[in-house]
Length: 447
Image (cartoon, rainbow, N blue to C red; front, side, top):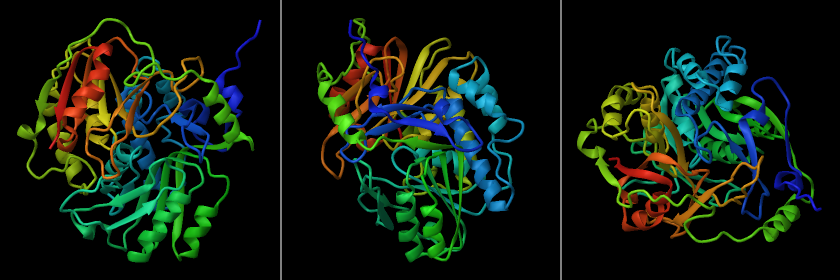
């Protein structure tokens, strides 16, 4: 009898810890990219991008990362986590142990004095993570974007070398947000080589020099200190902080192995679904909730055009009333699904629901542009997926979008979009693909 070798073992990529902090093998899973430049995809279990996750764990991870940034800027020794929040609690929250995510989140809430800094999050994966880091610091926030916006001038941009979608734009409504002088904190979910961070720092430093930079990530897997020396060559200081430090061991023939694995896998059964789902079909028409009617005047939805330090408290005050409009019932198994770069507000809505009365079973995730291989086998990080067309008229043209590990059996899925993404293609694509997986769907429109 022939025994099938798991895909992860065939790929031969391994992750191991190289320093203090969280265990990267707990925080990360492995999958295959559909990308000729890199074979492996490190799938975070605390980011809320590819894996539906307790939103309190996702926010707590970002807030804890912000505490490490505060330590670096203040010249304090950077520990892995505050002494009151041991690594074991973070690991327990990732494993889903009862009460662990709530305890981690309660202990991670911001308590530090505000820091005059600019936090820059990388689209699309780190837009909510960067927001949480800025919240922990009480700092201004901006995230890069791949969506050009009419009427907003480009203030900068950079290239992400290994990505499937490489161009990033910086579109602050107030160009003064990028002024030099104060520290700049760059946030990404994973540091693999550091080249993207170095490209970004070099471009911004040429326009607005400053003395201090910090790069913060959930997992730092850089093989060397080229990033630090590169920033030093610009005449600036760089600190790097992370919840976990790792080495990713990649066999020299990894790209060939990945191609052979992909070629041997069956093709997805149909567009719109890359895994079998249950036969019970939910309501095909989503209930619409328009938050524009109840949104605080002048409060940005997120960091695409800038989110000022004072806006964090305004968002906190508005969230309970906004979350109450989503129609989530106590005891329902609920997924709050953000869309691509729109991660921060869906995360906070989900976290507010999870912390609210009645204790609904809430998870948070977002759709993505990242094409990856779905394989339904134990130990593989992407066991289920939806494929659907883009629905926001992207500047780089139409293309496929993805939602991973959504699974089935949801009582309620809450999909959060902004107005450019509220199109007929949304209904025939993402919403139609979700219908067999949930009893009912709510579509939330932001300002």
